[in-house]
Length: 190
Image (cartoon, rainbow, N blue to C red; front, side):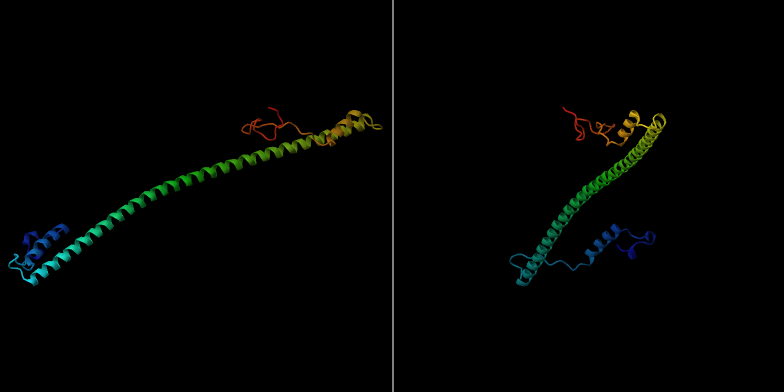
């Protein structure tokens, strides 16, 4: 039933399903009459040819439909695999981003600790050099005050000790560093 043939009280637009049903109902009303039913005695060669032609068309249509269905299933499978791969790739990417962020945080913390350690060592070295300068000045004052004419043995020993190369001290481990059993700088015997 089309909109033009509906009663005036039912003039609202038809839905898509309603239109399809209406089209289907109207289509059959306007179709040409079906071919008459033939028997083996009454069929003509032209009618038989038309039947075979319709059969071939129906077979081709069925084959095309089967091929289309098979391709649709293949596309669905490919889409499913692509979706799974995408999900896996997204998870791997997220994990890589998380690892990179963690590595950046560790690098920043390591840099901060190294800067603090460098500053502390620099300050210790400056204090040690200042202490050595004070000891040298005191030793020279002592030498000049106590025995100006002859070298004072204690002052001379102190000045000699300040001028000698430093003997290596045993390696110390700070918290978080290697233990003495795994440190290549330690001279311990196990």
